[in-house]
Amino acid sequence: MPKMNPKHNPAHVERTNRKRARNHVSARFPKIPQDDEWMDETGDRFQIMAGINNPAWGVGSRNGRPRCGLCGKTTNLTKTECCGQWICDDEDQYVLFSFDTNSCHRNHDRYTLCANHDHEGHEGKWQECPECREDFETEMYVWYGTNEYNFEKLPNPPAYAPTKCAKCKKIIHLGEDGFMVKGEKYFCERCGGLAQLMKLPT
Ligand SMILES: [Zn+2]
Ligand SMILES: [Zn+2]
Ligand SMILES: [Zn+2]
Ligand SMILES: [Zn+2]
Image (cartoon, rainbow, N blue to C red; front, side, top):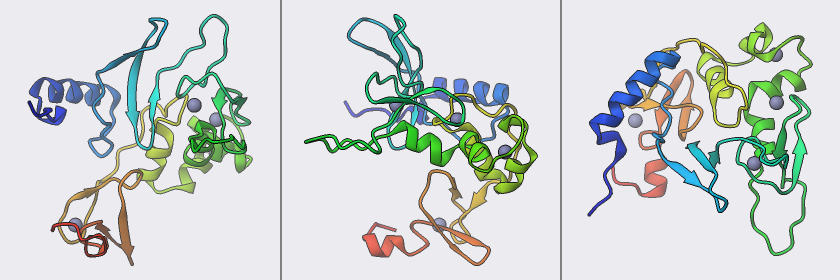
């Protein structure tokens, strides 16, 4: 039987809508639906969170053993400079015979307001920082503050109008989708010319 797209499951849509209403997260920033649980070898259950490049699993240190607060890994841990959390970091490691370059540290460092706030030397908490707010357009501000590379998410992210492809009007998610910009206009991957390059059906 073909796997059903969870987006087409009315029960899921219902849950997602409720969740959105609760969190005031606009439809602009849909998370990949995740109601699955994942169990590790010792029987601990984790909620599977949305993932872009790599799925991030729920947090927790267990038996006092530190784990990455984003993916749960227990090896190659370091602490973030910005917020002092345990996080995995393979970035600077030369791991023999390994092509695993996933690094939650790098993702947190590059794609979060928490790290931006620290790098830029702002004062106070990043969640309340007016300078961070000004550093990015609203959609990216919200994405940086709510993506899965955050330990703590931005409460009450501001609403913003969806970015749409200037040609086909498809919504473009700036934090996650491929797109092209021409002047003030945004184009989705298909309309922006990547389709021709990649020979995608149009
Ligand atoms: Zn990690
Ligand atoms: Zn941080
Ligand atoms: Zn800041
Ligand atoms: Zn388009």
